[in-house]
Every structure is written in C-alpha cells, then in structure tokens.
Amino acid sequence: MPYVYILECADKSFYVGSTWDMQKRLYEHESGINGAAYTRKRRPVRLVHVEETDRIADAFAREKQIQGWSRAKRIALIEGRLDALPGLSHRDDDRPGDAVAT
Image (tube, rainbow, N blue to C red; front, side, top):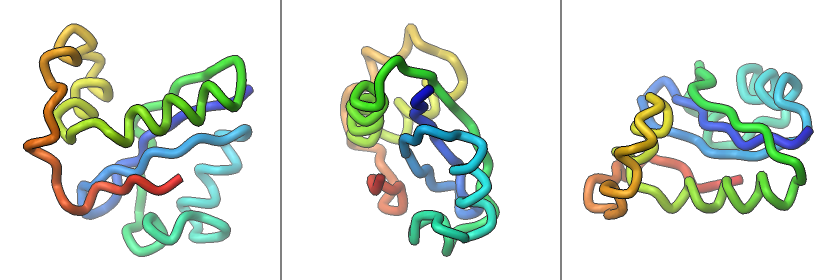
C-alpha cells in the first residue's frame, strides 16, 4: 500500500515524502542509507504523520499538495486539527528549512 508521510527533523523542519514501503523508507531516513540528502543532514528524524492511499499516484499527488502548505498548516494536519486547514492557506509563516523534496 502506498503512503504519504511527514518527518520532523532534528532542526524542527519537516520533510514530506511518499513511498510504497513505510517501514523500509523510515529506516532509510533514520540510518542515512538511501535516505534523502535533506534528512541525512538533519537526523534524527521522527515520523509525525502518515496516510495510506490506494494508488502511488494518489500518494505522490498528496505529497506535492502538502509540500505546498505553510508550516502552520502542516502542524495542524499533524495535530489532527483538520477543521483549521482551510484557514491556513497562506505561506506567510513558512520556515526556510522546510523540505519540499521527494
């Protein structure tokens, strides 16, 4: 089953990705083996959000959607405050260190 996920890095920035195998991908990020260059430099990482999707195309589309969100909107998603998401559509509060890589 495909997944989209958010990692919180040691520097408090977020990394958003998608994968077929969540357990394997998390291990890769944590160990620095085949992990993204962004997270390799910011370990340790912590899985803070994960969603299952039916198709990898859906996971990838959701990944790109979340990558375009502000930090505040990502935090609302992580905290489960879904009702707050529509009001957090502006990117004014983004931190420069938030990754948008896949």
